[in-house]
Length: 495
Image (cartoon, rainbow, N blue to C red):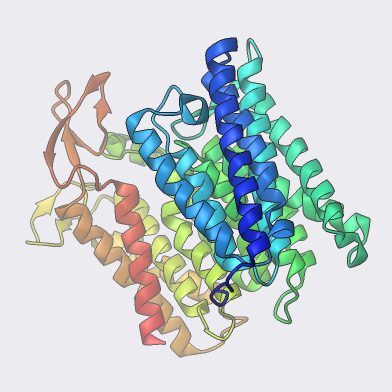
């Protein structure tokens, strides 16, 4: 975080009036075009975003102090929120779905100002430029084509052509933007091209996964992170490793999707997660999570036949989607980023604890269902059928313990001590026990009216299920997230 911004000069206050007039003109032009030329709200919205984005790009060249940009961005957040809630300025934010994208747009600018303005203002400009041009290109391309090839990773529809357009436009925009900031004086053109291509790849993946306007946060923040990795020198990290990580993660995601370890959304999520973990941590951080992913996926595939009898109980299949990837690996991804930001704090034990917990939970479930031994609920020790939420069996507990131990052993090269193995294994067991407890008490469970069986699914046997217990919004993914977080915290505390 930078120090508080200095007060602007009188000339900068004058510039503020010009910039404000330019912003108002962009919004007004969008409204006029939408009303008089009957353009779609999506196209006018993105046209406005491009105009505003270009103004934002030049902000560090206009203002020395961050004070005025902070005022403008925070005011825009408030005004856009009111506009979304009241339906005003449809040409700015009018889409077929409720979206707070126009609120997230200036909010992203606000965050980037706080972090990078005083030290690396070019990162602020380039990150917002990627959103203004690349994200707009994706939307406009998708809207312009009569029959685009559509896909849906989360709730919003995207198009293949739009994603391709975003990648190309983002890469070109970033390369040109870096030239404008004369970064070629410090880096070769080849390096600038690599930075642009890597940033565009990450931004395009985040845009594909984001919905309900969240790409207006995920795109600029992810681009700013990649740019910071390459442009801010660090004694702890070699930027070229991030480039290698990108290609390695792309290969892992593609192979995993091909052999049906992952759904499409899961493959995109793994690409983002793996590129971050290997890119920042190298093999030390990658081997444990790769061990979890490969062995757990293989175990799910091997036990698929035995699991068919209780498959109706589970919300999702063994083909992991983005939610499962985020639940099992999201904490690990956050920890490696925090380790990069705070290099003096050792977060590796917490990272291992999170992976051990995910492994213990997954292996416990798979092996417990596989052997179908006596199963009891953690609270009350009531006997239940194998596969029941919160159920624990001896085989499942042993399997989960072995899984946690395997993760601790996978890191033995970098932390060769019996103490580390005991702590990580214990953390994994603790996380899996919390998962079982929450699964039995608060996770949402539904009843199918056709087969009269309890399930995690809201739709079963071609019918809507009825809610019977737990808390509606607590899904299996959230319970898994709590499991992984518990493993990380226990390991961190014990260390």
